[in-house]
Structures are given as C-alpha cells and as structure tokens.
Picture 1 (cartoon, rainbow, N blue to C red):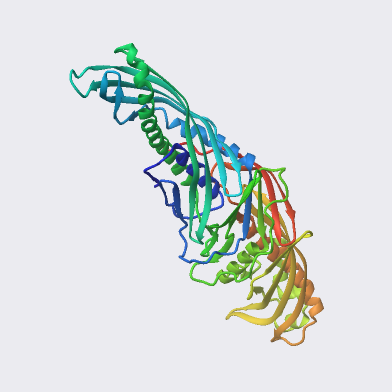
Picture 2: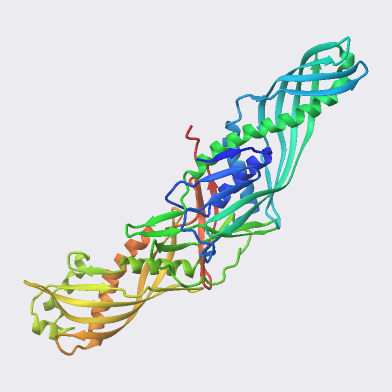
Length: 514
C-alpha cells in the first residue's frame, strides 16, 4: 500500500503520482510494488536480488512530451474525483498593531470546498520534467474574531469567505541509485496565490482594511497545507489503484523463467521526450544470467508517434539463454506429438529410401526423435530481419518392445528467420525454417548418406520443430505497459542490433477500487 506522509505542497502530490506511473510503465513484477512518498521524494524499491551494479539496458522506451501531457489529462479526473469532500483547515491565530491598539485575532472553522485542479502542462527539460499547474481553485469559509490585548479589550467577530486560485511550477527528476532502487525527486518548487478575493462580513466595517492583509497572509499558508493534504490523499488512492496492476517480473511459461523489467536508466531530451531503460531480460533465479551485452540503441527515431520501444538483441538472446537453461527447447518428437501429415516419417519402412541401413536393421519399427539444444540459440537483428542460429542434436531412436534404442544421432546447425509481431502489447512472432548444416554424430546401424538424411531433417524442422517453436513464441514477452494502456497501430522495423516498435496509444486508467 502506498503511504504519503508530510506532503509539503500540492505540487509534490500531483507530480509524484503522474511521474511514478510514467516511470513504472517500464517496470513489470509478481509482487505488489511498495512505494512510499515522503516530503519531496518517492523512494521506490524494485523487488530484486540486492546489487549495487546497474544491469545492461535491454529495452528502451521513449515517451514524447505530448504523450506525457495526454497521460496527465487522463489521470486528472480520477484525482479530481477524490476531492469532493470539504477540507477542514486548522485554526489560525496571530497578532497585529491597529489604530485601536495591539490585538490578537483568531480564524476558526476554516473550510475549503470545491477544490479543483486544472490539467497540468508537462515540459521535458535537461534535468527532468517541468510541470505547471496554472490554476488550483477552491472556495473558503471561516469565522474571525479579534480582541484588544490591553484595556478596554475591544473585541469583535464575524465571518469571511474567499475564492482562491494558485499557480504552481516544479521540476521532477528520476534518480537511479542502483539496479534495485530509484528516487523521484522534486526541485525548484514555486507555488503562488494568484487570486485570493477575501471578503469579511460582520463587525465594524471600518476595520476591514486593517485586518484584510493579515487575514490573507495567515490563511494562505494554512490553506495551502490543507489542500496539499487532501490532494495527497486523492493521489494516493489513484496511484495505489493504478500501480496495483504493475509487476516487475513476469513468469514466462511454467519453467521458472522470469522476464525482468526493472528500471536501469533515465534521460531527458528537452522539449521532446523522456527515455527510460529497463533490464529487459529473461533469467532464472539462482542461475547465471545471459552474459552478453546489448547493441547500441538510440533514444528515438523521430517524433511522429507518442511512444517508441526498442528491443535489443540482448533481450532476445537472454530469452534463448534462459529457455535453454530451463530445457524448454528440448523436445521428444513422436508420431503422437506432430501433425498427421508428417507421422509417416516415424516408421522405418517409410524411411528405407533415405536411410536403408535403418530399415535393414529395424524393419517396420516405430521411431522417435530426441531433439536437444545444448547451447543457447543466437539472435541476430539487422535491417533484413531477425535471424536465429541454433545448434542442436537429433537422436533417432527405434521403439522396441524393451524400450527405445539409439540408432544414430545428427549434429545440426540450423538457421531460421523470426518475423516479429505485436499482439495485445506483447512481442510475439513466427519462425520460418531456412536451412540446416547436418553432420553425423554417431551411428549404431552403419554408414549413412547424410545428404539423404538431410531431407528428413528439413521435414522435421518444417513440420515439427518450427510449429512447436511458434507455439512458444506466441506467448511472447510483454512490452512495458500499465493496465488501461493500449497501443494503436504499432509498427515494427528492424534496425542494426534492435527491433523498433513505434506506436501511438490510448490510456484509460483503471477505475478506483473504492
């Protein structure tokens, strides 16, 4: 649960809610995200194994300035909805010299109602996000009373009301501490009452002008603090609800593989966009992570879309590395696991032309192929597309009454193409088989003509390995989003070392749970 304590300004409240949601668009995890907002800083702990070293950036996301403003606009109704109840302000007491003597005054039963925030304007600058809220408005009612300190202790009382308008500016910056922590820091805060039309009622009218400025100054700070507290509560409700949809790690399949999107970098391009970098890697807890490094990725390819997400070759290779560790790529091919159109391959009689030695030793016997991948496949991204290089071994086994017997094994160095697709904010795709270099690892049935056996391998890849791989790839891995954000007409292009996903989006924040 989020906690907001000792909020110093209305600015801090709004800024931290809005920026935290933007930042966490790049982070996805199984456990609820613990966030504590204290004064002018949000401390966010990404629940990962503690380490001081930053991880490589596997995925970059750049959000255009206009998209930041759009998100702020979409969030404001949820925040405003929490501001309907009147706000009670603590009593204010002060002293002032007047023509009738030195008096003590008290402002009591101070109530703010109709609190409203205008849509903020977000500007990206070199240090962070500059935010302007041109007008926060409210209506104030209170009672006033004064008493002269010396004899004859003249006193009077009445009521007052005012319409208040506040202009606010501030800067917000994301500061990365290490791979498990970052702060959102407020700086350059400036809040100004641009309109405070205080009217006094009751009592001696000739004293109004004497007290007016003193009452304004006294009420101003108390009213600001009260507004801050109320807005903080509203932001807490909206932010808690929005961030409850976020995870930093997502399980991939059911093999212990996790997809890690912890925040690792942030940068700002003035008046244009902010860029967030995440780990963007697959890994298995307790096992070595992929040791490679990502290729260079720019922050942006242009400002024609609201958001750009770049997926590096590092990310894809980490997926292959973790899947290999988990044994996901190993598969036992049988006539019962493949389409009926190819089941004829799994009988020695049907292979007597390609592998006569196999038929001669084991006539009319059922076959199975134990397909294993001992080393991780390598993904190479170029403007032509994504090519996958896979080293594997295929052990052809004959099914005898006593159990399977190894007949021969082939070493395979295969090349495949991967066509990337974006489905429901996920990176998915489909494999297509190109070719394979086939060599004989060993044989228990005598000599083999590898060129003929290669024809069988091609069929196994086209109708067995590739379809099975495509089933896995259709699961894909997530692009950085929160609930309610939907990409619109995303486009995919292939660059040197990374895949570019560029898109506009629609953001409809989830409704409040309370």
